[in-house]
Image 1 (cartoon, rainbow, N blue to C red):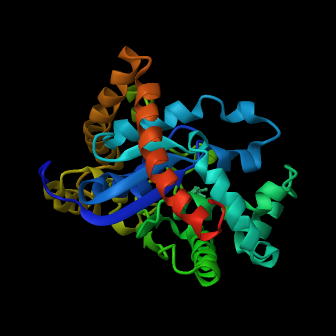
Image 2: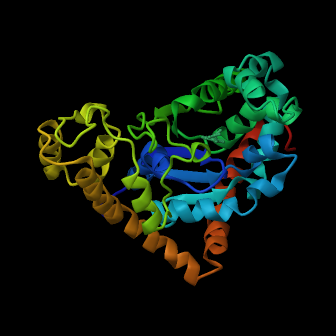
Image 3: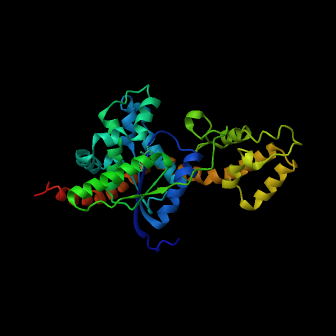
Length: 335
Ligand code: TRP
């Protein structure tokens, strides 16, 4: 798309928690979609650092350094600060004021019955999450979104209950003070086809992920040890790509013209899983190299992340101030 193509007059807002280095699962599940959207829509993407504190408040050291690393991963993956606004949530304090105002009108029962609330309380039982902030997390998320009055919010399935709450909060505010917030629609990210190296969901905590900044030797080692189709115990046993953990990677990363050859080699046992993996190493190298190169720009310029975020924070703040000012008027807080 050329630089001059006008973007659709539809704003998009989304955020990601800074919880560690991004991997291929994040790329194909979320980032690829964001990179495409920045060409067609006005996009604001932010590092949700306050959200990370809702669960890490007792030991914030754990998330130290993750904010700049996340921004590096984003830019390396193709988000272009000239095409979208990249910012840090905690540097745009208007989120907090809107959070306070929306918390006035949000019934506690809506928060208590949010399915992710109870799940997380049990799942993260090692942490004391019986806090006011953790209960109010969806109100903070509603503020992150409504502050910018977006048309769409790209999210994964797991965030849908929160987005539904955002819409309910918007409706309630509109009912009380007159129409103000458009109800944002979910842009559901298609389910990522990619599972981890062992066939389970790709996750850093399972140790089955390939990082966007993985070094070539470690990537190669991981690919060569991947689990393949169980049918191919011996080289002469034909396999089935549909049952193989490797094939979805080829579908995403290898030149589509080569896929028939892969299927043929597997189903007719004319090549081994090792050959298949070697080809995947090649494809993955071709995919990861430009990402690694873009990341290198940050090594050469230590202030780049800060500069980039300062610019994005200012751009977000400007939009946030305008909308918040208008909402304050609705509440007669300006006189
Ligand atoms: N709750 C999201 C998560 O944990 C992150 C997030 C915070 C978010 N605010 C948001 C996502 C606003 C979309 C829109 O992944």
